[in-house]
Length: 281
Image 1: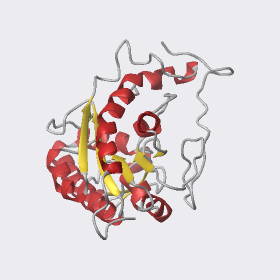
Image 2: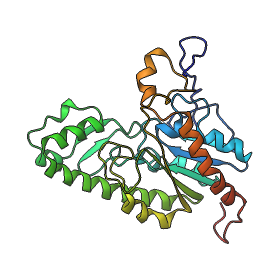
Image 3: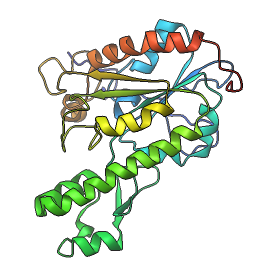
Image 4: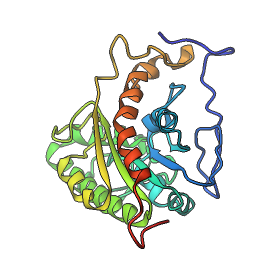
């Protein structure tokens, strides 16, 4: 059952910044000293409405410092283009990277906000040529815009999806190659990578795309959980009355426990393993 803190019931995320990055992360702020693991990802990694997100649960289980650098609605761009975060990750023992959707990043068809990647900035000339009848000024968010394009024409929409898939692989490859620490990808979704779906996150990402990135990471952990919308979903979550609808659509406490359980043995092995010669941070 959801419960309330004093005041309006909303959870205090104690927002903070790390290094010279302009992004706000979930606090409390932790020192970037000694050995630590860093967690990158979207709403689930951030732990919206969750007192103890899986990054904290992993840290407690391992007795090892973990830095939560999740961002609500994040795409790859928010991390891949933030050099201060890359520098922080390169000082970490390991980076856990939630697999994020392909919709929230700039590509040949449209651009997104550099820090709030779910915000649609505008179409490219190519997109306007393909969708001449669409008024793109009506859309502020990528998911809303893409749903409208799919409704207009499935055939043309397939061209957009293929571009997003290719851009995702290229961007992930570049990002992973820039990180000198150990890397673990976390697939956290209601579906498996084999299931084709244009609704469930991570949007448009499939098994073929993951396998193209696998040689660049140390491991890929897959956690497929129950749909967020169920009668037990909000049990243990913290939210105000105004946040109730959003909370019901967000993965709950049990999902974070499941993700942490899957990550702990993998990270324990990586943290204890010696670095290969010439690869130590």
